Length: 129
Image 1 (tube, rainbow, N blue to C red):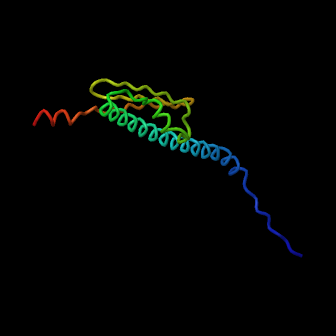
Image 2: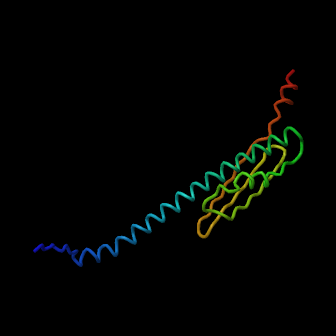
């Protein structure tokens, strides 16, 4: 006759695991949220910088204002993972283009400000000649 040894877990370790496992799961969730936050922050910062540079180049070449907000929204469309509520404000003056972007979701929020100078090297070079 074959007898199998039953392996039992002591009640003490079951109680300890019931405290430890939720801590591991919550730590995992916090790490995932942090990775998503920094991913979205990098995308928003890059899109804001690219929008500011495009606006500065457009103003320099054509002396008209460019729709920077629409360009920004086009750049981030479909790329954000976590933050869905994104607001952007673009300000254009004689010297620079500023893009302010704010993104938030629940308790997480990020603000990004990028600027690009409007340079006219052609005018300065012609003045030197």
